[in-house]
Length: 296
Image (tube, rainbow, N blue to C red; front, side, top):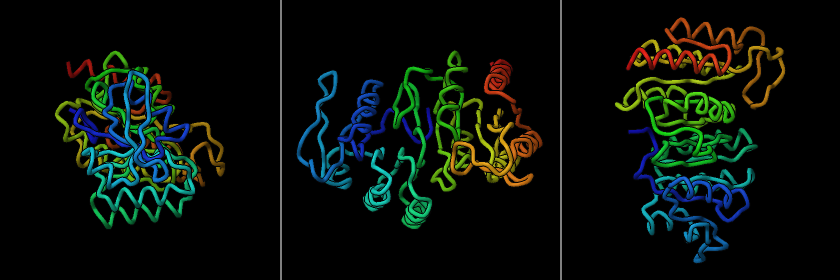
C-alpha cells in the first residue's frame, strides 16, 4: 500500500502548458503516473502531445477536468502570483489531493488558502515549495525523480526536496511505500505529524524516516506525537547543525533564534521520544538499515 497517492490516483496538472509543467508532466507520464488532464482557461479544448504517443486534454477549469476524467489529484505548477487563485479553484472543486510545487508564494497567500481549505474540509494540500510525493511503482505527483528507488517498506517524510532524493538513493536497496516532501515554507498544508499518522496506519510501511531542519518547532511537536501515537520505528535527521544563529538557511522557515529551533534541540527532543537520529544523511540511512534488519 501507500499513503495519499496510489495506483488508483488520476492526476491533472494546473499549469501543464507552461515550461515547468510540460517538463514534469512528461516525467510523471514516463514514470507511469496516470496524468489525465491539464488546466489552462486560455487553451481549453486543446490537447498536448507527449512522448510515447500520449495525448493529454486541456480543460478550462479544475471542476471540468474532474468531471471529465475522474481526477482525484492535482499538481500545481502555477507562478507564485497566481498560485492562490489556482489553489482556491481546486479547493472549490473539492479536489481530494492538491500538490503545490510552486516556490516563492507569499506567506500571507499560503495562510489564506490553507485556512480556506481547512474550512472547506475536502482537500489535503501538500506544499507549497515542495517536490511533491511518490509511491514508487504506483504514482508520482510532482518533481521527485522516479528512478531513485523502487517500492519497499520505508515511509519517508521530509521538509527538504534534495534530502528527500538523497535519502531515497541511500536506501534504494530497501525501497519506499511513499516518500512525501512537505515543503520548507513557514506555512504548509501537510505536516510531519499528518504523515506520521498515515504511515502508522499503513500496513505496508514497516519503518519511517523523518527529515526535519532548523527553525520553528515542527520537529519537537512531531517528537511528542511519536511518543504518544507511533509504534513503528522512526529514524530522524535534522538539517542545519552548523547553521549560524539568526540567519535564514535555504528555506523561509529555517531560521534559528537563540536556543529555539536549533538542530541540537530538535535532535534531543526526537531522541527523548525514542527516535534514532543521525548527524548526517548517510548515518541516518545506516541507522534505518539496522532497523530494517531487526524487522526482517
